[in-house]
Length: 395
Image 1 (cartoon, rainbow, N blue to C red):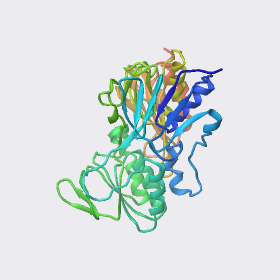
Image 2: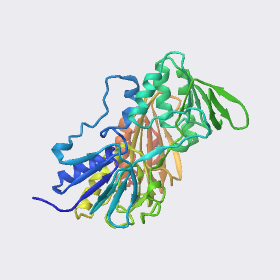
Image 3: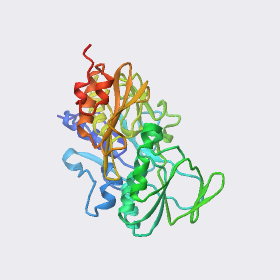
Image 4: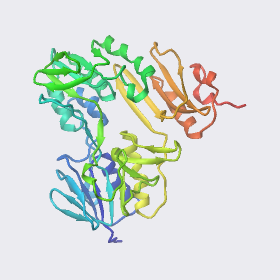
């Protein structure tokens, strides 16, 4: 059965491809055009800072079968503007649409300076870095966040001389707070990484870094891993509201009729946490398209997850669920100096987020507990011998 409605998807990462898949799975028979700024077909990003760096045979591509889904894939084509009429303007042409899904993701933040700096955002970035890593290479990573830690893990395995420079007081301070981030600092030292916190970079120069306040770090290669920003600059003046990304409601609708957003660029209204949130998580790119596709086809579904993220660094598996931005307190579950532990954030007597280190069962049970919104007994939650699911306050 034919359908005359035209769907255009700007962005050919996981979120864009999943949107196309979901539309077809839900019976949409109209034309779908998938436009990607990169020359490669869709691929998974999490392996780029993990196994792609260490396993040459690993292919992170999503094996997208465009012919089977009747999707018109346009690679190496960048979105540039939205026309006053319902059309997407790219650097190669114009695409009229009835529904447009924005899935343009995010772009890495660069440091000032004329020196060469590399990033770890794309598949090509990962391949280039893998070719560079070798014994005694002096590698300086700016940023001790998730990506910086994972890259440092891979680089020391190659025998590189790794220095990680972090402007904050501890690794992961911006992501999970100073008390939790401080527990990870010893992992760097144990791996032989030179970690320098509270050290701001003024500029990237040929041959190394110029530090704020004076001083330099000589290095062979610099990788900048200080975060990303939503790829939304091209939407200025389009009528699409921007607020730390593309502002969407719980159904992933933008302020402009017929336009939706998913993935890293989408800042959605979370009913669960009572605020607008945006996450650069694989789990978001995987599941937001389910809601967007349903609503494009006339549904009224809401995206309101318990967010999930994971990181593999220095031989440990870190898993995070929830959102701790409005937490009132934090407690340790187990000894953070030990091999396996968790940090739990509470608000209103309820668990709102948990970070686990090599305690996957705690993560799974914690996610269910956050979703249920049941009050918890803090003393029982702090006791690692008590299953998280049994920490519910039954009084």
